[in-house]
Amino acid sequence: MAQELKEIELILDEKRGLDGVYAMSVVTDPAMEEWFVKMSKQSTVMLKEIDAEKRIICGPALIPEKRIYRRDEEMGEYNIYFTKETIRRAAEIFLEKNRQAEATIEHESDVDGMIVVESWIVDNKKMDKATHLGFDVPEGTWMITMKVHNDDVWSKVKKGEVNGFSIEGKFADRMMLNKQQATMSKEEQEDQEIIELLKGLFKKYYDGKKKNS
Image (cartoon, rainbow, N blue to C red; front, side, top):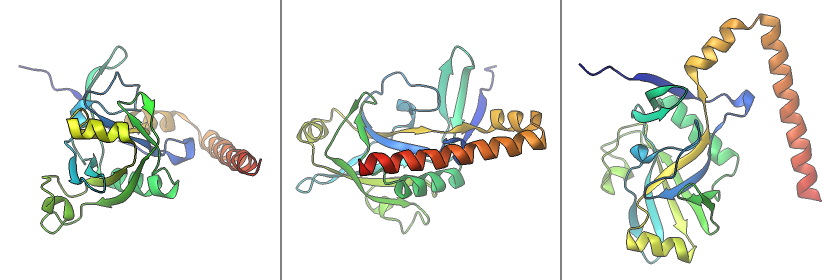
């Protein structure tokens, strides 16, 4: 009898900067992933070219409760997954932080000329645009539409050399986070919250200086 794999829920931890998706990648077979950063090919769902003239492509970015197989030396074999609530908040943060133009190809090279022009959560599968476009995805799925100005990337889309979206992001492991919080005293937790707040203020300050320099 096959042993059931451990399941790990990935969540957001905005206080520590683990605030979800920071870039979209168009992929065929993604390169080796880093821990909690890049989704593997098991999480890739075929994208669709919905307007060739305008160079518009569409597909799911994240699907709730979908088990994604992972394996590494530290943890062995396991599955990761996201809930509807985490996906919805990740989609909000992606727009709030203006990450629409952050894109890569095969998780390896940053590319210009690609931008998310539409983003939505599937709330009613029967009535949703995703269903009308031919996608069979559950409610809670995060769908995106991208405009491809980049000639090289568009050529790969036309040739079928890239066929899906895969996220790049930073997430927390709920199991590990719960263990850390359980071992911290109330004073330590409060100190950590102050440290994270100061980090955020310093980042905003230096980001502002860079923009004005």
